[in-house]
Length: 210
Image (cartoon, rainbow, N blue to C red; front, top):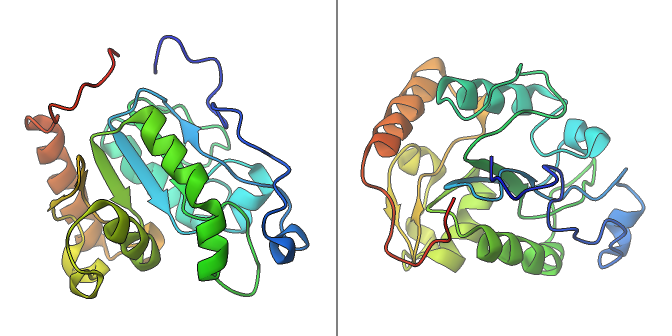
């Protein structure tokens, strides 16, 4: 973890009482900002908190999706705690969402994603990761549109799962939602990401020292 970091949860002190989306204020338990190592090379970005993260306040915890992702991170050496941890020990990984509040009956609207975009952009700017991992189709569309030159209609989470996509200052490696993956798809991602980690993946973009 970054030696100068004080907090894993919402390390940049973003607004935890955000009211930009009135409909979500009525349904959420809490705002779920990013969590993890602020010096991370790898940022995992989901669409929106599930019921588990809405309860814990920590992305990708408290439900099957979170446990499946943390299992993958453990295999990659990026998580040192149990998969059911509500405060996982992460190294070189940061977890976040494109939308920060949960609606139990629907995905976020385009307007709600737009309201949350400054939070995600700020996290990406301050962490300056090397690899963005969009988790799921909607996250791939949002991240791909913003950070690659690939037309959004050419992006497909199944076809692009565990493949490297060149971006604007970043590389993307999309991931199918972890608890929707087959065992083969999980193994494919672990092998591909392990190979990426062993490669010279760092960009020449003036990263701060770790």
